[in-house]
Length: 162
Ligand code: MN
Image 1 (tube, rainbow, N blue to C red):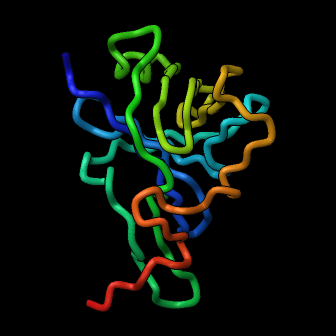
Image 2 (image 1 turned 90 degrees about the horizontal axis):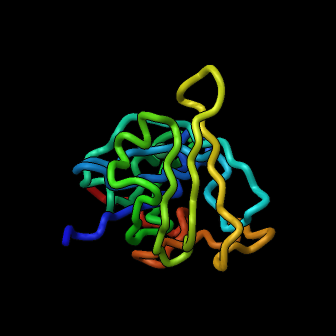
């Protein structure tokens, strides 16, 4: 049997706060930027912007990437774990076709996430959580901001003194 596929969600403060949702598919991390973050709330429909695949090294990355100027930029590993594609053995083809169903086993995110491409701009997708036993109405990722690796919030990450 193949090794379980990994996923990661990074809470990324850059020009705008967003969450980067990344699924291991064929040796890279298929990635979406989700401004309001993923949720367990089955009533939420979140914009997810499909971005370039990232290298697997991004799985464990957190740190302060810039502390210059008045806007600090930083990343925490907000959640991570394993996942399985649902309804397909070829998730890369599912992404190309514009619909990916993922059963996720994270520390915060559990259950069935669905990503669906929407509209003219092929980068625009919707992210939702199915109404399953892990769904929680009203669940807000901003109420659970800490890194699952370090336990730190974005604000608490130390600036690398190099
Ligand atoms: Mn990002």
